[in-house]
Length: 286
Image (tube, rainbow, N blue to C red; front, side, top):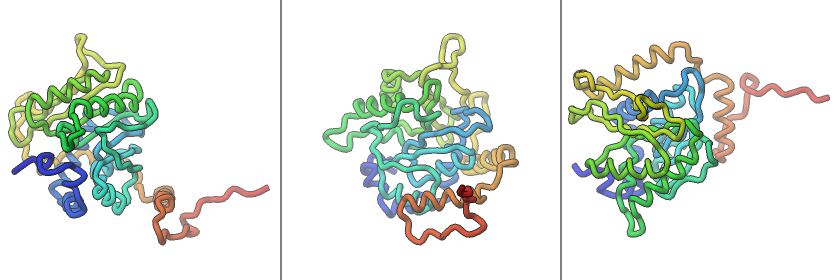
């Protein structure tokens, strides 16, 4: 089967039909959740401290939901209007931007505490238009990403490289833009479970023997190859047992009010009025 990035540009490939099919597929949901949890593990954010994260290629918000569950705030960007519309219909928590990441991004310097990206980076290696130059687009992307991250922050990209040359192209572009880091390859000897994660540091790099300290990959010590879907479910359930045990329910009064405020700002019609059970307390006038 041909790779998706070889069939059409992402904004065309992920049309209305494909965006809905992608989001409703339970297998894809499970894989997306697993990859997002793994990216967060590599990101290694401080425990019990909410972070402000950038989700690059957020799609319909499947990865953003995991960020919500972990207590983080996030901004998502994607090139597919159909994917973003599905995200809006699902009322995801993050703010959403329609953006071609190959053209860079215009956030203020030092805005984000970190960034993740799931199954996106390889798309930048294609020249979908005569004006597209993969090397230039990667440089523009990494330059503006470096600026958008606070110093010492990390960015983790899960991606599907087509070959070693593509890996080298991506890594060279990132290093020229100021990043340090390297590849984390989980289960490198497995065809099915092998996953690539590019781990980048934006300054203040932790070192070990003078080299960037890259997180340890899974499967390096002879661990058995997992069944992808069972493996995903086990990891998700285990994480929910250990980290979600004491998490407060998000559907409390503040959550409901926040959702209503977002809907009103987006111009959603028929937003329910605040009831006496959810209305904010007004300060007395003097």
